[in-house]
Image (tube, rainbow, N blue to C red; front, side):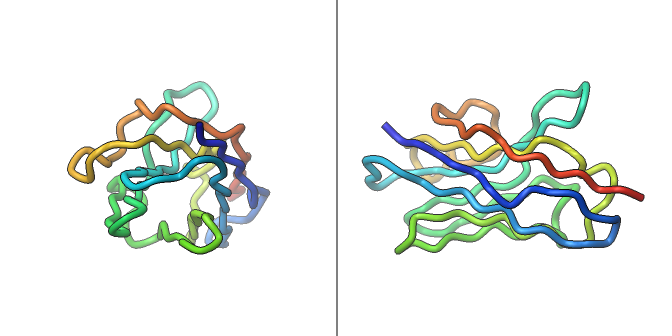
Length: 125
């Protein structure tokens, strides 16, 4: 069982930055794939970025490449999402999600087993 706790959301003006954190708790063994997802108001949830805990291999959706960075503090079991050059269209509830799978399948699909409660990010123009 894995528990995820997000923090770091808030309100910011366009062009600003925020850093989200996801604390990973529980029985963590090799093969953990962790992702950040977001759900804008009235829209479907989409994958934003993912990281494979063992290798730190990352994936990003096209709309955030060059602006967002996913990283991990292995010792603290924390996953970060650094968000720069934020745009109003980045406004959404952001979720951390994870499950155990091979590295080749660690991507942005919306099918993770464990989910956090979410943290709101609001970007004003």
